[in-house]
Length: 184
Image (cartoon, rainbow, N blue to C red; front, side, top):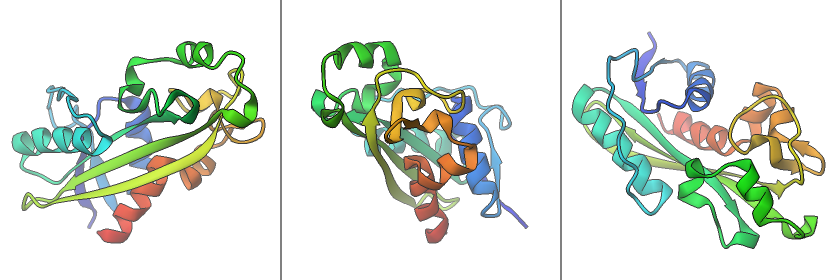
């Protein structure tokens, strides 16, 4: 029998990724909508871990069931780690504008993901994953979401150019979820 877990996100892209990976590890993933939960927790933390914990705790308090919450974002080295935990507030155009004139070799970046899992007994566990790459100069690819079309995992190849399975095999969220699956 599959273990039921609530994915504490309203982001359709994240929900799709969480379902695809977790269901392959014998979890029955329920969305907030599936559970009739309309609360959108405020991400007031200053770290990915704080924000993942805030979301998981708030949804756990409502549902009293196992919850997994994610906070993730892009850290561009040239920009001192921006946009970081504020990634959802920015877009590709903003990032490309900030990096105008910056040579390719200085456009190093990483996607970071922190997952917070709370089991039905209220015990919390955290899992982190990263994906290293560079910020390209233009959108490439039709898959993925967010910054995927400009995040190059190898020269000229963005996350948005990969299939879901290829992306999940190397992505920050995929790496964190594999750690979680190994823990559970």
